[in-house]
View 1 (tube, rainbow, N blue to C red):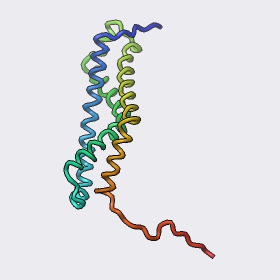
View 2: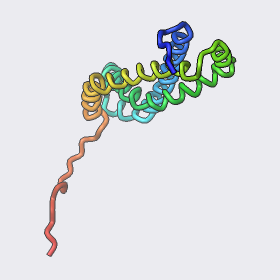
View 3: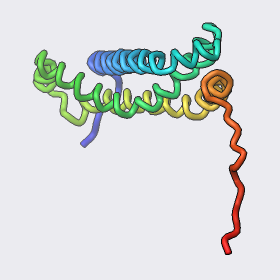
View 4: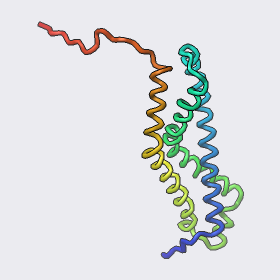
Length: 160
């Protein structure tokens, strides 16, 4: 079986819809996660007098890439199911198949889109998240975590 892998209009349509559905779903869940995180940590922000600029720029701007990368595999799965079911409900898959496009050829834009998302995830893992986590952890140590001294830590007793 030989495939013609040149991009066609339908491929660009599927890739555009797939990527946009992925990012819209991811942005919605990141928004919900941020709201829950703010409600959980608002007392610590107020009690430690964290400045608003530091909360936004040092914590939440660096919080988003980590959670985007963490949720991206799940949302690729959700996007495939949601987007394909929407195409099926709109009878787009029937139209594509009736034009002589095979199921295997129709999967090429899906694989291309998933590869783009995987490369984005790899880029986030290698270049963005390490620096972002360093800044976020420094913020957490300064404003969120309580500095408790443990006097009896790492003390070993000999038992007779």
